[in-house]
Amino acid sequence: MLSPRRRQVIIAGLGAVVAPAAFAALPTEEAPQKLLLSGRVVGPDGGALSGATVAAGQARTATDADGRFMLMSTTPRYRVTYRGRSVEGMAANPRPGADGTGRASIGVTLA
Image (cartoon, rainbow, N blue to C red; front, side, top):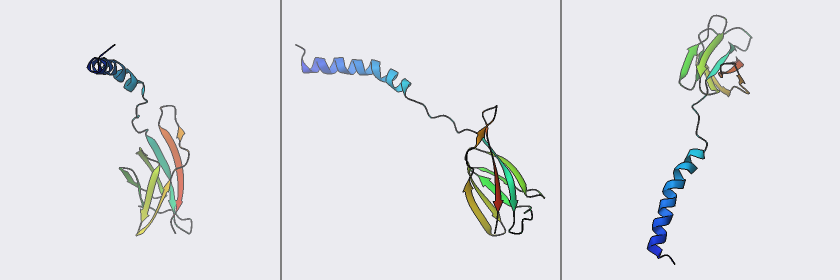
């Protein structure tokens, strides 16, 4: 029969051997996937809004003369701002490209 102290030493020794293997088998959190977000921002009349700010995560850009934009982000959540008006949303179902980068296209109408 083992003494209680001897049992503690044996159990601790097993934990030191088993724990690293158990933790190594746990899934690791992957780095955020890149997302190429593109689209067009228009006003209520359907006209392009040039200079609207589009932000997603830490990335930020402005729309061109045709209201189009493109930015690289790690999140599908976006915010579009133009002359005091803004709208928030989330790009749905980003499609993965051959290089592993997700791609999503959105259309925004600011009222």
